[in-house]
Length: 401
Image: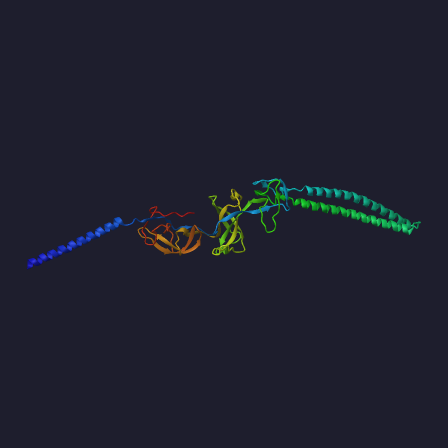
């Protein structure tokens, strides 16, 4: 009996030991399978939170347009045949330069006739006034003789005085006719002026829509037509762009702004807000906007710009230097970021934000300097709890200026 009991205990101990060994081997196999089949950690870009400059800005919701501060669509004030076309597209002109002339030979003839009438009128006035002066002297002599009781009839004196007054009236009428002729000359010159198209300011001719010998007419009221000459002043340019109605109240005249253009790589940051529209555009019911104009002030930044270029504006509302910040692209909706620490999976954290623009956002609380946040938040699988490694091992992106 004792022998059988010892034998059974030995078998039980061997069975337990075998079970332990088998369990261990199975666990080891499971760990090995997991280790060799587990997904690789996701490579992400990281940014180390540090201090720097943060600017609060607003930008346009839709693309803006470069425009000239002055632009004139010119046409003659009176219709007629183009007799002279002085400029072509691209011509630089000065203020008061004649750009185009409508046939006006008849008006010039009228001016010549009016000037000739003026000359003749002056001659007639000289004649009549000389006669009037003689008649006055004759009347004065007769009055003196009468006063000295010489035999002079009252009728003769009265006739002389009447003649003198009549001649003086004729002299005044002759002089008035000179003024009439001068006014006629001015009227003819004004009519002649209506046949000339002059530059109202220094500028460049953008477009010419007339040909020599062609008949041109001014635009009828309410019916726009192509201007004979389109004149631009490109020494002063501005960008007109729509700003969302939510952002518009913070914008003030004179605020600094940068202008970005698809045609040029560099920003132009000498801009100033020069005008804010006094009304809201509601062309799109779901995106109402306010038109804002930004004028570029530095001459060197005007080089190469042309009216009509598409452009974006970024208006600076406020700025803070040496403040804790992180890239705006790292932020998830609700002011949340993914924090990375060596040897740990990603964790999500909410923080309090201050000033912000498309590039950087100020950190008021919730994140400390030196912590690393994930930049690649749009990468598949990047979320809280994910295993990640830095694309640049043991190093986060350095802060940009």
